[in-house]
Length: 215
Length: 215
DNA sequence: GCTCAAATTAAACAATTGTTTAAAAAGAGT
DNA sequence: ACTCTTTTTAAACAATTGTTTAATTTGAGC
Image 1 (cartoon, rainbow over the protein chains, first blue to last red):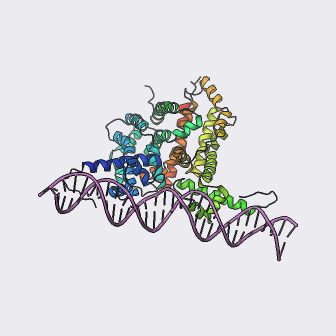
Image 2: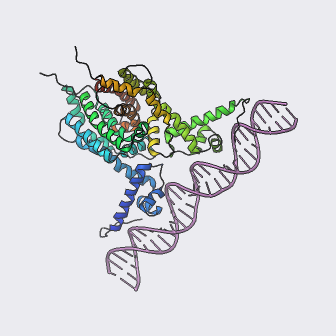
Image 3: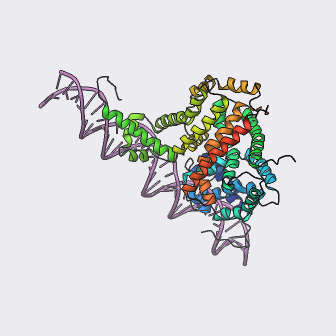
């Protein structure tokens, strides 16, 4: 067992533990829990299989750690915007803007999260933290008020979230299908994705928010 | 090797081959290629591992077979509507209607297809048949004409397909996430999905088709 | 009832899986 | 230089993987 004493440098320790996490993130992200072996990860680290279990007890434990971090990233931008003081329409615009740019940088994240959850191949650590913190942002109240004020169409927040997430996540999950279906190259795929962003923003905003009759 | 002679009944043969395919479909669909073993499938059949390879040479070959069938189902309703003689707007409405009802019956299909494609865990049999047949429906021409006639917004067919697919497939892929995120039961999830269908139909139609100024 | 191919089974194969053990190496405090 | 903990390694573990072999059962044609 590894004991931590305060007056130790642990410089080498920190770095290898972090190196393993990085490698695990990379491998799990692209191949999934079932699609890779601990030796794949060890090879990525350039080290030994035993070292993984030395730091992280088991493949499952390591995966749960990676998954939790990924889930946090996955919902981060949405949660951050929820917590601001902006008007609802501005929040929605900002979410679409930020989510999209973020997933442009991390296109494999949505598939990793959703597939891992659906598979339940691993005891899913869906932190109630996350669930609670959505409610804590006060977004529910803001949304209900906007509906009562006649600013927003009669639709639940849950269904609104489905609408937004569908158009934010799916395009990245279907990149390869899109590519093969239309026989286009990666550059064209990216161009289509960028176009999608502007379409979606306009479409969803127009649909959700009731335009005031011009006085 | 199995030799087929015309004057044989093969009743039992047909049935076991089909039974294996059914079991494989079920297991592959829910657990994915990497997430299951051939023995899982054999157990589902109630038979032997050797029998799978007797009929289908290997796990990969069996998977490719299942995948091709699933891919065909996956695009079937869309292709069928493309080939009709309807107006573009009617086609879109019908596609949304049919796709949605179909995936209500087969909610695991989108994740299976998209994850399998992204993983490329198996030599992907994306049949050029499919790709060609999209073009063969004449949908491209119909779409371009509708744009020139000012009926449809200036958007590519590819981006339109992204829009539609996102809202058809993603909700089923994210069922579990949705459930856990909002702490609701399956019945409520289904209700949200049904609501989503009507929202999406209205939203997409409204967005894509330019409403004529009232004469 | 005999024949012979097709269908099905049990057993074995080597390779890979996640995990553990036990030994070696590294490093800090004295 | 010595001690003792932490880190790293190589090797081994039993279990499971996909596949193959060889034997057995089945069933139809004669």
